[in-house]
Image (tube, rainbow, N blue to C red; front, side, top):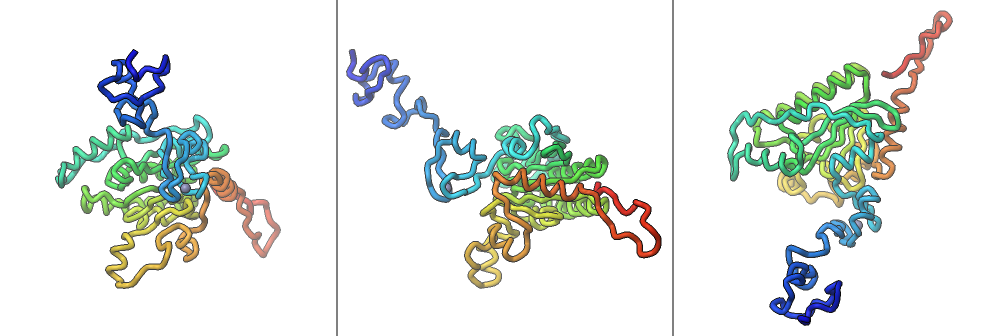
Length: 321
Ligand SMILES: [Zn+2]
């Protein structure tokens, strides 16, 4: 028997590679030989970006991708976010077919068209936001969730269009709107057309407001650029995940412009809460319960003060939506 084979489990791997039997060569153990056939999946452990703790990935998934040691909130997929927030099997996606038309035929190192195709392949989605309807603890609502894996969650004309159509649906069905943002900002491959989405989405939120329907804006890491500078900061309630980077321009650009050193934690959710730009910071495990509480508050009958003259005829009570 060749020296590598210690038994049926082939557990000893101290022989030089050329002495391995063909079967052992096919089963080379990753931590000795670093082969492609490693028996240890590369995603078994995940290293926390903040405290550098190695965490068993399955435990991390069970904890909604929040580090058990330092509470760092990892970025999560659209699918995980739906599972986290919405009632089981309540999600109905809308307008999944909408994709960019590449109006400028933009070409940098590679063509915009090519980059979009790669993003579609990587995420199995046509755009950087998924929109749809669902219920949260029984409350029906219209929901938009950004996907950072799709070109950094950037907002181009298709993302803007999907948000506007989602608002239209919320108005038609008299539902509150929830958008979970995770975006690097406007998609510059579409030039001014991507910047126009800031106006277009802001106008849609204004229409929602005129219809007296609430907009809950949830900011996750990162929410920056044109998304922050438009609809994301127009929520009736603006929530953020702990430690989320929220801002318009990057800190280096700001420092160069104002020629001053920025304070510690600048552009993090905690700093924004302190300075009054957002309403609350909610950890992921409390997010669903907090949103349900807000939806309960907004859907409760509104009590108006009765008119000074004459008895109340009972019409002083109305529902919010
Ligand atoms: Zn950690």
